[in-house]
Image (cartoon, rainbow, N blue to C red; front, side, top):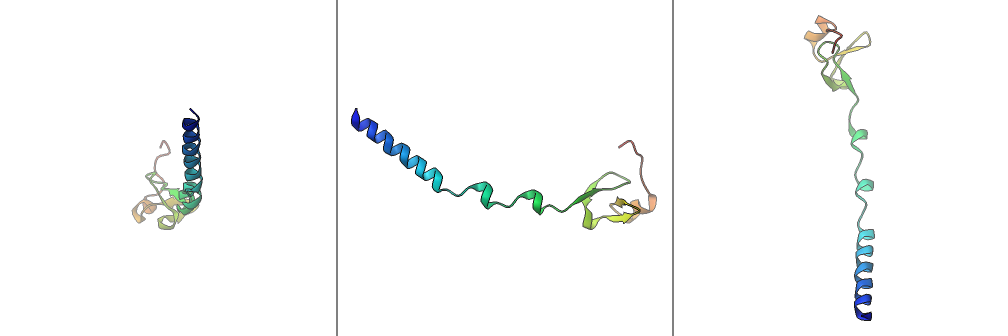
Length: 77
């Protein structure tokens, strides 16, 4: 019985040591939110796109030159 108890303690210790030696996944991976560019919504069609690819006009953003020329779309979206 004592041998079984000692074996259990050794196995439990080995598992605990193994788990603590593995690097933390959250600490090594950069956050996706930090890598993502700021997104804006097209005032005409409502599609979301990166701000660096959008066309600005009077505090509104558009996804293409055609939508910029057509102006804002319906507000019910």
